Amino acid sequence: MRQHVTDPESCIQCSACEMACRQAAIQAYAGRFCIDASLCNECGKCIEECPTGAAACYIETETPFTQQEQALWQAIPREKESDSISGLFPDSNA
Ligand code: SF4
Ligand code: SF4
Image (cartoon, rainbow, N blue to C red; front, side, top):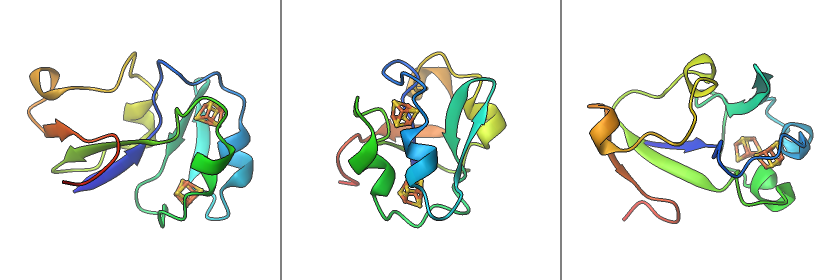
């Protein structure tokens, strides 16, 4: 599945995405603003409000990462770091 995530390397923790999300899909965990895949409806509001582009990230994964798991990321995990990641597609699901 394609999972919408935030990029810890470009996030400045401004909380604009959390405020923009009408699904309450974004919460801060340990200072990281993470998206609940079960609530996100891909409306794109968080991406529109994010000043750095950090909210415009997607990964391909067999099982969605929980917000608690995402909060531990220093960077978006890549294929070599996790068997569950099949690829990183920032802009499309191609
Ligand atoms: S795309 Fe929409 S529903 Fe999903 S996290 Fe962003 S604002 Fe919330
Ligand atoms: S709006 Fe962007 S920079 Fe601000 S907390 Fe959300 S992901 Fe991070």
